[in-house]
Structures are given as structure tokens and as C-alpha cells.
Amino acid sequence: MKVVIIGTNHAGISAANTLLDNYDDIELVMIDRNSNLSYLGCGTALWVGRQIDGYDHLFYTRPEDFEEKGAKILLETAVTDVDYDKQIVYAETKDGEKIEESYDKLIHATGSKPIAPNLPGADLEGMHFLKLFQEGQDVDLALTDPNNETVAVIGAGYIGVEIAEAAQRRGKKVLLFDAAPTSLSNYYDTELTSIMDENLEQHGIETHFGELAEEYIGENGKIVGLKTTKGEYEVDVIINAIGFLPNAPFAKDHLETYDNGAYLVDRTFKTSDDNVYAIGDCATNWSNVTNSPTYIALASNAVRSGIVAGHNIGGTEIEGAGIQGSNGISIFGLNLVSTGLSARLAEKAGFDVKVSDFEDTQFPVFMPKNEKVKIRLVYEAGTNRLLGAQLLSKYDISMAIHMFSLAIQEQLTVDKLQLLDIFFLPHFNQPYNYITMAALQADK
Image (cartoon, rainbow, N blue to C red; front, side, top):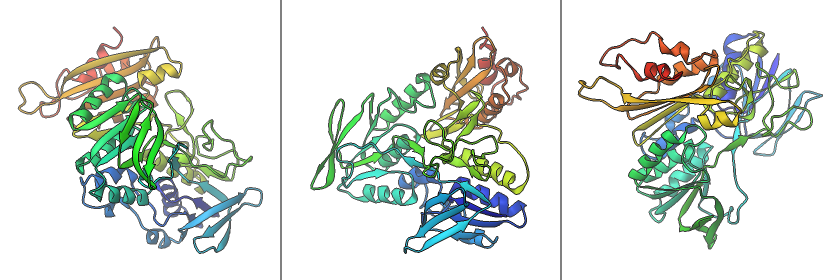
């Protein structure tokens, strides 16, 4: 069986490894327009902020690894068209060579693309996005230039907040903008984001929330300022981190799509064409919170989708477990993790929402080192079904979110968490720990 994969980042790589490592007689062709593969973009801010030494280890595999397994890899090769009736992929190399690859099964793994508002001045020098490795290089070079003293970051989601921290660590004056009234508004409620906002400001980042960009101001072809709905600011560099859209250019009139243009897939990641699969950021996934298709662009989701699609193509019928959108962030030592829906987004999705907030220390008071922990459980009134969980602390509370993710996946209620067997040892937690206490008070 011949399989063609368009896209060689997290989703495409996991599908390729699944097929090559588990199934015989697979002829595999991997095509990507980029010159590299497997770039961990989540490490860009750490590299740019000099929190890690260089970027070499942000690439976790090589083309040779797949060629040794028998795959054919075509990098710097852009797919120009797909004929679904004839089952042929048409592509062109950087040198202009035309390529045709037939397929028995096709996998779209083309990822996502940054949102780029068509504002005046969008083509000025000094405007940057963050998705590809090369874009990270450009931002790093811009921050190295001593003439670039002030950086404006537009978008206070994960990437925006992370690159704002990185720029501040490089000694730049940083202005952070977002149309929302707070940072990280797609993942957390204001009870937690207000603490992150304060953390950003305490570390010298100037926040501008509830503010929309209107124009990129330039002189002699270069960025010199930013105009928003609330004023004008002198800046030397603009990093646009508003968000991402699915990169799904080959749907045509053939493949069904989601409301944002992503390829619509079933629980096996098969599209409306039995011979075509779509995985990662270009495709939908299944939400265990709303029990409906959703779109959440995360590397972890991409990897799992590739594994599921690969096995189904190989002949092992399995379904994806669905997703909760589990995520985390660490900025200037403040850690936030969440899974499922925030109270705001749960209400927007039509749920009758209740919340349980609890705050305590990680360890008993007699322990010499301690940190406060804030937890919020979001659940459905009447059924008590858990819809989301959020935690915040300077202590590393990240592993706790995995339990809540599984609880949401299995449609559990907060009642099931109230007397959950959680061990106690002063080195790790408290006998009346915050997970138990938040669950116990939830139905009061």
C-alpha cells in the first residue's frame, strides 16, 4: 500500500513512525515545503530568551531516520494540487521540478498558519510572526540588534506571553497587547489570569488589554510605531501572535470542512473521503467536554492524531480518545495548567455552570519551603459533571492536570473526586489537599 503524507511536523511524523514501525509493505512518501522537519516551536521562546543553549535540540528527528526505514522524503517541495478522483498528488520542488505521486491512502498533515490581519503597514520591515523555525531565527536576530529597543507583542495567548517574556529577558522594553481584557483568556478565568497579568507587570512588561491594533506605522519601509484603538506607541519591532487558523488548502469542493475551514474528520481521523485522512492542526478533533467536533491546535493532539490515523491506515481499527485541550504555561516562575473549559467558555457552550475555588499551600505549614496553590473546578449544575480544571502556583503543579483530563474524558462528576484515594506525605502534599477540598465543597 502506498501512503503519501503532506506535512512533516508533529502529526505527519507520528503517522509516519506508526506506519513504518508497525506495518509491512508500506510504501511511504513524505512531502513538505519547508527545509526541515520536527521543529518544536514551543521551545522558540526558551531559545530566543536564552533560557536554553541554542536550538539544535528543538529538532527531534532527521530526514535520514525515515529514509533508513524506507520512506521517500521530499523537502522544499510544495504540493500544488490533489486529484482525489485519480488519487494523485501534484507538487513542485524549489528548483521547479514537477512531481506526481499516486496514493492508495493520503494524509493531510499541513498544520496551521498564523492569523495575519490585513492592516496598513503589514508589509513593513520589523513585522514578525512565530510559527516556523526560520521565523524564530528572524525574531532572534531582531532582538540581537541593539537599535531595536522596544518590542510590541500583539496577542496575549500562550505564544504572545512566552515571547514577551523572552524579549524582556533580552533586555528589551516590551508592550503586550490583546483585544481581550486579560492575558490567556482562552484557557483560564479572570480569577487566575489577573494573577498572571500582575506577574507580567511586576517583571516589567507593559500590558495593554482591551486594545485592538489598527495600523502598523512605518518610516522608510521600517516599523517605527503601532496605532491601536487607544493610542499610538513608538516601537521598533512588532511580533504578531494573535493566533492560528487551520492550514487546509486542499479541501476544494471534495472534503467536508469545519466552520473555521479545518478538515472535518471522524474519530479515526478519516475525512469524508475514505482514502483521505487529516491529522494535527489542519483537522478537527473530538471534544469530550461538549461531545462534538472541535478545533484545538496543540502539538500533543497532533501526535496522538497521527498515531490513530497511522494504525487505521495500517489495518488496526482504533478510535481517538478525544481531547480536553490540556495545556500549561510557565512565565517568570509562575505556573498555570488547565484542561477542559473555563467557566466563561463553558457558559458560552451552553452549559449551566458552577465553579469551586480553593486556595491553600502545597505542603503543611511546618515545611520550610512552601508555595500557595490556587485551584478552580468548573462543573455542570444538576449533573455535577466535571467540565474543566485550572491550577496556578509557583510550585510545579503540572502533573495534577492529567488526572483532571482523564476525569473529563471519562465524563466523571466532581463527586467522584471527593473521596479519591490521594496519598499524603509532607514532602509532597497535605492530608486535606486542595484537590480533595475543592471537590468536597463543589456541591455545597
